[in-house]
Length: 193
Image 1: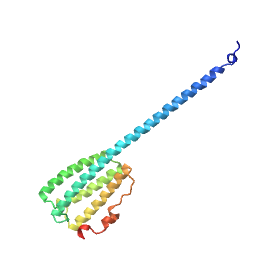
Image 2: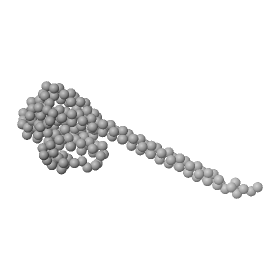
Image 3: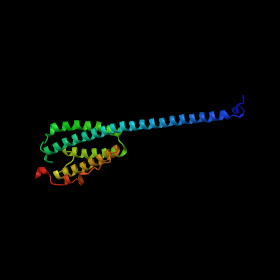
Image 4: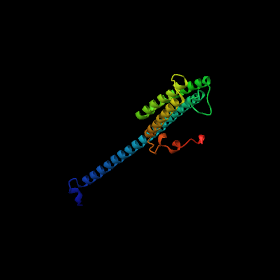
């Protein structure tokens, strides 16, 4: 019997070869596409984990600074430098302040490890201004209640700067209003109305 394919040089083989090449190209493309998607998903998960840890560090540091400066404020009230309803006696307060300073230091180490450059710089500036408040209550810095209030406002500005840097580091782009721009802060204090 006569078969035309038999006399065609490579006729059947070339079709099979093209099919085999097509299958190989498809398999390689599928593998590469899957690998790239898996890599992208892994990076996204890793980024999310780091962001969660970074958030925890920033929150812990902000909380430690808040505790430290709240104690400093209560001690300042005990010295007549600040008007707070719960003044703190010097002896008991200085020991609590020392404990709060240790916690602030531990929390700052986490910021150094996990934070970006801007957040670390803002955290350093914030803690320097917190230490100024401590110097007032430890009698290391002389001053009046006006000096205390000026130092306290500068501390609050540095706190806002830290919050902005931390929010930027975490990708939080919602508007943040500085204390100096907030109408609720600029209006008269309700406690004095």
